[in-house]
Length: 254
Image (tube, helix red, strand yellow):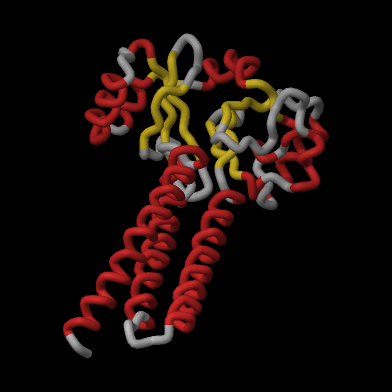
């Protein structure tokens, strides 16, 4: 391979790399700026998966271009090869983004004694028509706050608990959802003072204090609840008067 051919290959693959990186940035903005806003990317296990997927996609496309590109190849043949590479790469990226989309977090739900992140794939499709009026079951623009209403009777509670044992969490049942504002009294009753969290996990005291400082909240104005998600556990810090969450820590407080 001559120096001129090597330079041509490097230039073509470099241009392909720049275009691939630009598309990856657009996809990342959509994924982490809309569907998996912090801290949901980490809680849902999507961050590592997306970075791996995009990294492989970005690397293989330019590498394939480097292999097939040649200034001595017929123009029509070269264009055909490059179109095939770009099409396969776009299809792979599109499939990856679609997979992340259908598994996106859609709600953070107060589940009686904890908060739980619910993902679109966790809600049985046959239950969607039971969603209360005024609640978007599968919001596009990121997770919303919801609560769970009290059970109507013992039979409903028993049925829901058995379903939870079989993998359908209470928070994944739309018929139990209600607006978060209605759940605030129950949230505040279940929440614990953040001083208990600091006493229970002294090694994380600095992290808790930093979160309070960033949100301009005092220790006496803050309560917490443990948080469960598909991939990780965490802790939600919330205002002691309004029950509005203002921070999520990567700390298992169950």
